[in-house]
Length: 72
Image (cartoon, rainbow, N blue to C red; front, side):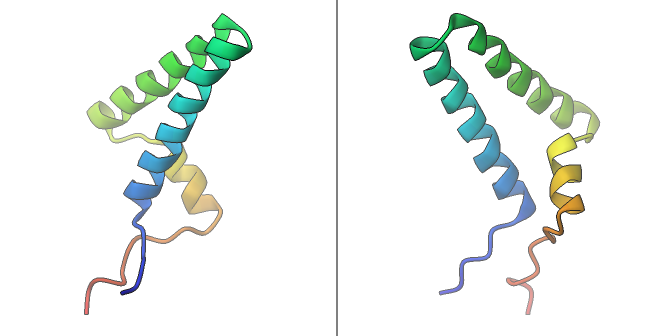
């Protein structure tokens, strides 16, 4: 079985790490980290409404390609 994550699943993983990390930071470091959680949520909403996703642009710039391994 070959593991070949799509760009969308990588974006979801990064967003989840950012949200979970900022929640922990807001609990254990400083409460202002919760604003980062709000920013990530805002960008997820903006991406779903407009199709503009800065993380997708970053992944494209570093060379992550769309998932083509399942198409045979």
